[in-house]
Image 1 (cartoon, rainbow, N blue to C red):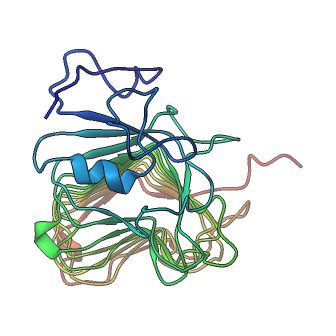
Image 2: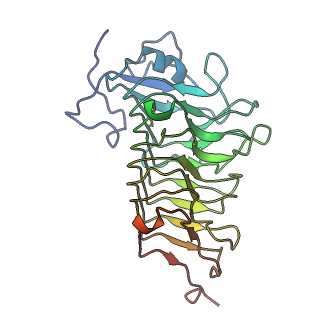
Image 3: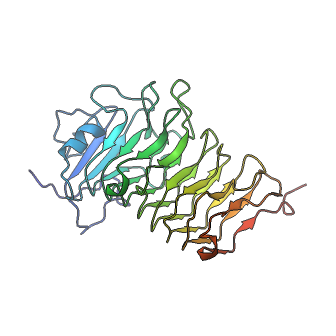
Length: 302
């Protein structure tokens, strides 16, 4: 296979000179063609699905999405898009966020489904706006412990939804046991149309969740079940839709040996009377809770 040199094409914040990367494939869901080789940003592929078919397990290949229509482009694009190659990177080209009128808003067809379904290890997803279908997450992780090391960063979840297919039930659905091992979620925003939890994890180990914003999601911001620990959950911000205990971070099992530091929650513009953090499990005594706060309203303008 032809090994192209890396090209930035305005993506210097994504591809760095000298990085140890594999092939780089460019996708334009509005103007690409899967008959192209995808190595040149001026001759991009049409679908992420086809670009993934060209990637090789553990080759550290990159897929750079230059453009994508707000709705499912049709053709041979999977719904959901199955990221099934280990150590692949799927990144939007607009850094640091796909926002405003950018077209990197990935959305399924009108049939409810997640946007990305991850069944591989050590996958990176970044710089997208995502919305899934009712009953699904925007991103779903499957495969138990074999699917691990997912990194999601600089994404916006359910800022817009497909009225026929959505809103999504979860932002990131990692409810298959152990699939959240070594997961990283950072610098993301989870919006109010999400029906249930922003992030749901079952029995994760070594997960890191930091610097995310949860804005009125229907369930808990971060919902963790099971007993595996050694997670770090730090510096997240929650605007809760109701004044209910656990609406920020809710541990429903015996999660232990984890750190929960510097998280802040309030109920809209008001103080929360309820404690937004819940840790009922027998492992609670082994968790470190420090510097987590309920927001105050005394600094609000009159």
